[in-house]
Every structure is written in structure tokens, then in C-alpha cells.
Length: 229
Image (cartoon, rainbow, N blue to C red; front, side, top):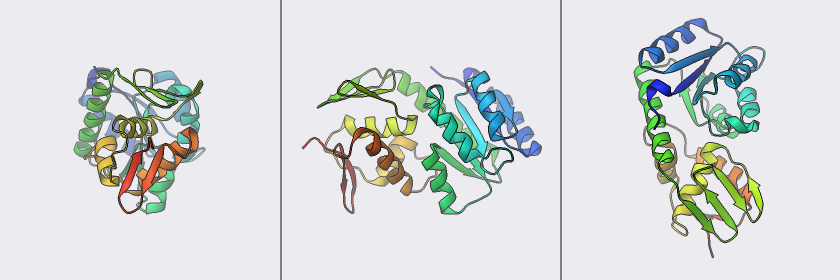
């Protein structure tokens, strides 16, 4: 089971004051902390430290956070890593771009250390709960293996980033039940993670692109369900 004493955090920001603030608070809480000053160095640092969570600024020199996130998600070992963007930009399009790149969460500066620590603790708790789940969901030609984070459609293996996998497995665990966007946000992202409802739409679209259009059905004005009809 994950605890703060073995939970690894990579902090990525070109502002040394922010890096120092986060490193101090995270280390004091018992996290193992590594740092990087831009997206390119973040990728190198992630390969070395294999973090559980990456806290990453969006606007950085050399390589920005969005580009770094996309590259990390393309690397198999980081598909299940939590990536949380830190940004002073609060426009909605920035948040959508972040989630489209594969982010799990989005925190607006100035950062409140206590709120951040609470959010990280929630991620650690959910990871611990997922480690205790060992069931395989099989519906038609789709098999979802929660122990290996693998999805199979027929004989083909489909690799999904962590949040896409969690969203698919949550819907498939109760087929034909309709969930609103708010219910999906609360159950997949958690009630203590503040993201917009459109985040669900972005992840649903990405899951459909990979497993096909027929499995997840939109119920207009209500939400989504895993379809077995």
C-alpha cells in the first residue's frame, strides 16, 4: 500500500521560489521529491526517479508542460503516473488543453501548500485502493484487467493512460447504468479534485478513439453509460 514515505513526487517549474516552497512542504510531509526546471529536464528526471506524481508548470522555457506531458504519456512507464499541472493561467481553454494532453488535475497559482497536500493524499489513497482490487471485467470482446492496467479488445491489447483506464473500468463495472458528468468526476477524479465537467467529455472521446464508438453511449442531457445492447 502506498504511503507518503514511498510516494515519489517530481516538481517541475522554472520559478526557483515555487520549487523551493513545494520541495520544502512535500519533504516535510514525508514525500520523496525530485525537481526539474523545464519540460525537457522533467522527462529526463522522470526516467531517473520514476515518480508517482508529477507537479508541472505549463509555461516554461525549452519545453512547456503540455508538450512534456504528451511525451511522457507516449512512454509506457508513465501512462499511469499522475500528472498535475501548475499554472497561473485560469482560462478554460488552458484546462481543456491540459486534460487533452493527458493531465489528471489542474491547480491554479498561487499554490496553497495545505490544499495541495490534501489532494496528493487523496491520490495516494486511491492508488492504495486500486492495488487491493484484483478483478478482471469481461464484457463481449472487451477485457479490462485492473491488476495490470491492461485493456484487450479481442486479441489486441490497448494501452490507456491512467485516468482513461479508470473511467472505462468504472463505467464497465456497472454496464448500462447511466452516470452524470458530476458522478463520473466524483468517482474517477474524486470530490476533492476541482476540474470542469468538460474534462469527462475529453476523456470519453479519447477512450472511444481507442476502443471503438459502440461501447460508451451518450445519453443526451444526462451523461454516459457502458453499452451492452
